[in-house]
Image 1: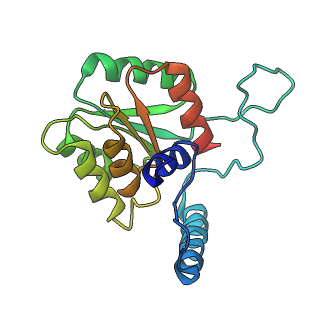
Image 2: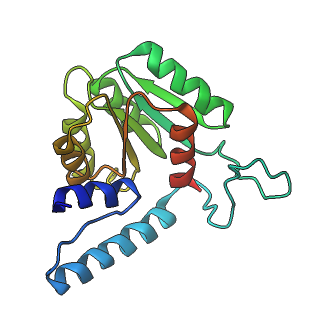
Image 3: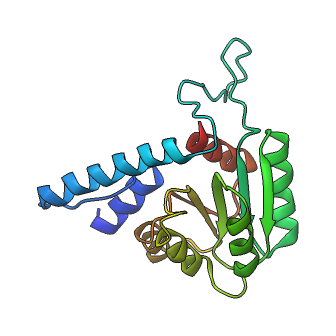
Length: 190
């Protein structure tokens, strides 16, 4: 396997960063420090209750503790209204609060007014593409910690790599099952 294939596989499985051997141990330590500081900063500054001990119930086990997702607001950024409506309905059925933006300008307006817990970002949107929005969000100290799930119809390896390199937390190809998307959202917010 090539390094790029391994990187895509690791990132799609949930890795936050990817280092190639041999690597600079100081960079690894710096990355670990940054991750821990951002995680702790997110917990301290967050208006969202931290539900680390809650179990996300994917098997409908009625005896398992349930996570209350009503404190989480998801921003769906997509100019495909039918697709965004479908995602919004599923998120609402799972107890999330939802905001929708059809373009970059609307997304930035929502982000300036509301605390957003997670962003579902379609790559093909008007004004700026999703990659440009992702880059802008990751360079903003107030929003750099917000999990971002990228949606794309293209399956090119270079798109996966670009998304992960720019800071996407997850990357899902269309078409996908709504169950898969909701499960991934819950994993980031549990």
